[in-house]
Image (cartoon, rainbow, N blue to C red; front, side, top):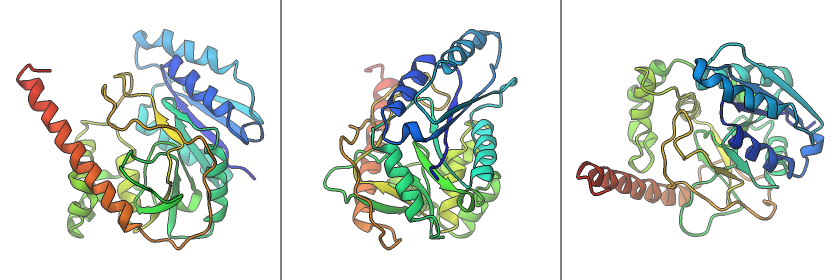
Length: 295
C-alpha cells in the first residue's frame, strides 16, 4: 500500500497550485490518496485568500482520491501539522508530508514510497527526506544523517510516536547530555531555534521533530540529489524571509535506492558542517551590511 500524501495549506493560492501541479506529474500520483488540511483564517484579512485556496482545492484531480479537511478555526502552522500528521499516521501507519511551498521532482513519490517500504521495520530509521542541502561535491545516491528534517518527508507511526511536543523538555535533555554543539551542525543555530520556540518567538514543529529524532539517536534517509525545492522564501510563509540560500535544482532522474547499513555518513556530514558554517558567515555578513545601510 502506498503512503497517503498529506498536504498542509493556508492562504497562498499560487504556491499551493504550483505544489499540487508538481505532485500531479509524479510517478504514482494517480495511485496515491491525497489528503489536504486547509487551516482556517487568522482574521478577516485572510478570509479571501483562504477561500481562494479552498476554491482551487476543489478542482484538483489526478490522484487516486482527494480529501479536503477545512479547519473552521486557525490552528497555526505547528498545531495544524502536528495534529494532522498524528491523525493520518495513526490511521494509515505511514505518511508522506508536504507543505504548500514545496515543489517536487516527478520522482519524489517513487523515492518516498520505496524507501518507506525498504526501511519500514528498521527501528534506527525515523524518517525519509526528499530535500537535500546544496552542499558542494559528490553525494551518494542515498545517505543517512542523525535527526530529522521537514521539507518533503515521510515516516511511520513508530517514528512519529517519538515526537515530543514539549520543547522545554527537549532543550533540557540536550543540555543534560551536552549535545548542543553536535545539534548545531556547523554552528547553525538549531538550539537557538528551539529556545525561541519555547518562548513563543517562532511556531516551529520542525525543530521539535529534529530534536526528538536526534535525542533518540534515530536517522533519516536523504537522496543525493534533491527531490524537493522550497519556493516559499519570498516572505510569504510563517517562518521564512526572502532569500535563496537553500535553493536547489530538482533531480531529473530516479534515485537509486538499496538497503544499506544505518549509520551517519561522516563524509556528507563534513560537507554539511562546511555548508552551514559558510551559510552562517554569509547571513551574519549581510546582517552587518543591512545595519550599515549598504544593503
